[in-house]
Image 1 (cartoon, rainbow, N blue to C red):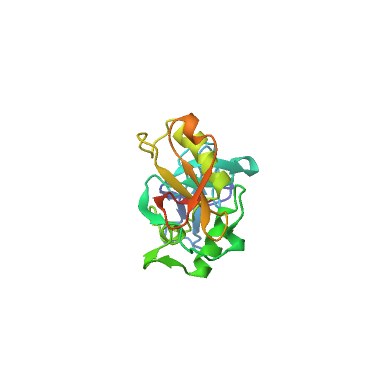
Image 2 (image 1 turned 90 degrees about the vertical axis):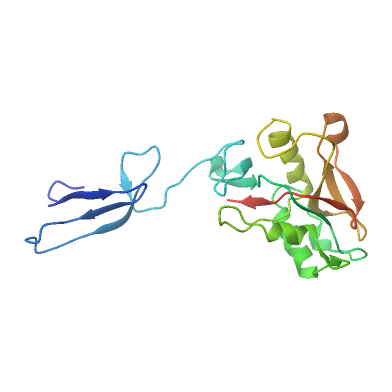
Length: 214
């Protein structure tokens, strides 16, 4: 606030500050709306607050951050709950657009599966279940690629971070197709059964854990 500004800060809300002139004698009334006081800063700003995250942090939608880029400004978070066990779907249908294996390929894989609009005996695919999820009113989730799922296993599951039941050896679908009849998944359990991804018939029911970019 400059020295020649007449008035005072009348209201300071959480992260949003309104600057107004309460005096009726003032000929000019100016309001600065949507000024933000961002975490870790002593200055008001008009721009959106820019946060950085590290692996293990709570993400913008309430999930667990398991992968970051751009110094933590962007990345991926995994939801905190298993969704209904579902088949991968699309038996006998080769979806070449769903064969991306790298971290970050899950969104394109999921979109390709949804475009194929496959069901198994009327049951929605794992990709559809993941894409329909929302957390804290935030949508934009998808089924992770196989490399992304493996990263979740090591960063979240093996590190005892919240969100996973650590009993048994549950299967989790990835969005990565192997061929027209099989898709890749991960077994979440002791290291000796989980070090390497596996693939199973797409009619197999396995757990669905959604992820979301930020």
